[in-house]
Length: 283
Image (cartoon, rainbow, N blue to C red; front, side):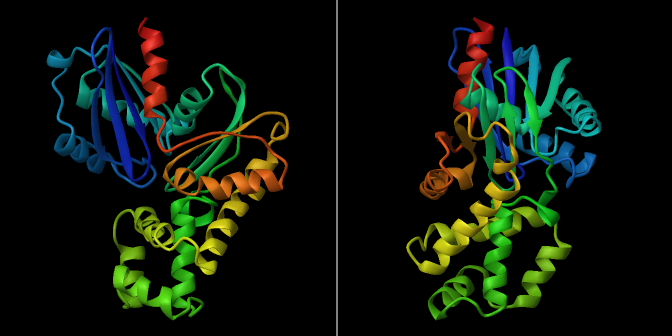
């Protein structure tokens, strides 16, 4: 028995073939988001970055967890594409938050959040997701996520809020032509990824008061719009997954302390936990 599992965000997709008695095989492709990519875009991405011969790998099950995949219509859309590409009949598609739940909590309850390019949170009872806050996407939501922070960085630069040090740092990384930046943002593919790419500036300027303000303000917005809205938030640990959560876990810890909440594990990717989960399934 072999499972091909995938954890897909808007920027990157981690794939792993889990087989009984054998070392897991890992692959990586660009991210997939059915709200931002057409059937042809996803199909071509898979053909180019992860060509597949299922006679060679003999995977019987494909479990895909992805950003934008919680909606039943989008699940069917992705399932058709994945089944056709991989040739695996038993294909299941779920939202990326379930991957985080299984990796972080296993069969225990918790409040689970993803802070990557985008953001979301849910209450997980140990088996099922019982309460998930709606995601409004990169235009109207994603508080605390990479693209949300990226917007704040761009605003600080364009509106002249940054001091000379940070303004120069921005220009060295991303250029000083606002028209070109706006054109890329509004007329090129994957604007959410583009915004999230600005976060590197926060990572590499920790300690600067403006940088710390942006990080704390954006994550605090996520607490207010998502985490604090769950009825069980004060009764169980908070778990976090994603590149932004992992990079700024110290700030998450401070916010949890401030709100008198218990913080659990913070991981960059759920794949390691997913591999353990599926090894137990295989037996």
